[in-house]
Image 1 (tube, one colour):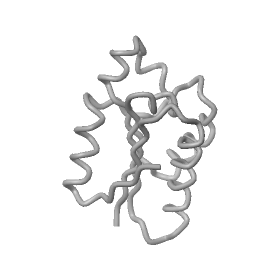
Image 2 (image 1 turned 90 degrees about the horizontal axis):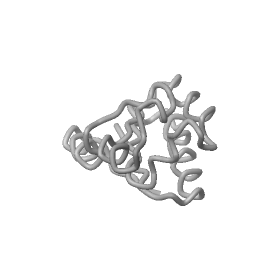
Image 3 (image 1 turned 45 degrees about the horizontal axis):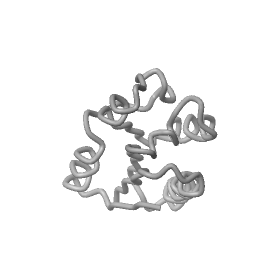
Length: 110
């Protein structure tokens, strides 16, 4: 089984929940792949100046795929270097979520 966690809010509580869900999915032993897609205000959850840098690095090391929306970066004047190293920039976050769902990923949004 596969899951994608979609982070679109600036709400810190939602960021905390998204990463807790991701960790729980990994710990369950039932999920093969987990992806996190950040876009809109949720892009700040994966930013180098955010509160979750160490947590993201740990999840990346465990094989979680992180994506950040390129459109969001452009709209906010941010660069790829503003994201935690290892977060892949995709052209559009919504397209990435849709692509993953088409590949069988279950959609989760805190």
